[in-house]
Amino acid sequence: MKFIGIDLGWSSGASGLCCLNWENNQLQFIECDRQQSLNDILTWIDTKISPTSAAIIAVDAPTIIANPRECAKPMINSPTNTSGATTQAAIPPSPFAQKTVEFGLSLESRGFVHAPTIEAQKLGRYQIEVFPHPATINLFKLDRILKYKKGKLAERQLELMKLCQYIRDILPTLEPSLNLANIPKQNPPSSAFICGSNLPEIPTSIATLKALEDKLDALLCAYIGAHWWYWGIERNLVLGDRTTGYIVIPQLR
Image (cartoon, rainbow, N blue to C red; front, top):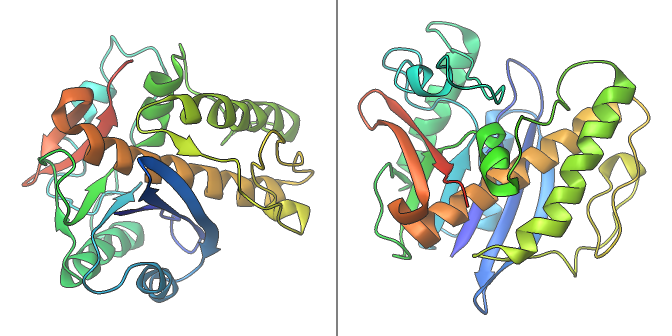
């Protein structure tokens, strides 16, 4: 069983991609990448998953838009939510909404059915929508989101390094566990990734920071997909439904 995470880029931005594999009762890291166009993303997926292989593709973007994610807004953007984890509406016919819906349909044509409900650990070809911010809060027991997406470069650097630390220290201890011990170092430094006991080099520009951010978000998406497959509803929340749109979020540990 493979788990693909897609941090789908807004408008013309690049998308972060990650592939994990379930092997020997553990998640094994396969690859992280970035691609620009939908065709390139789909080609990358096709190289990782054969037409008959079982997999979950977890996408950080609304691939179902009935009423711009209103299904999730009342629960994530409620007055009682002080974590900072809020959704962004993709209102048709914006280019991003067209892109995300088209992407979901392309996955369906490859046999990846939407899975707002799932039988835990049953092999199949699924796709789900995920949201890394609330996932990090629950998985890492945080009070607020890590603000590595906005702000001054120095502030974003610090927050992104915190995220790296949490991924390295906590995901290998959870169930399912993620094996990060055999990830090779990558060059140039802008493509650096978590490697054994080491952390990536701190990005020194907005461009290199964004490249690492996209890959880390994709890794989180892939892990959320694995967590959904492994536990199902026992340790996950589903906000919304197949008709109006939905988001899968790991529950508080």
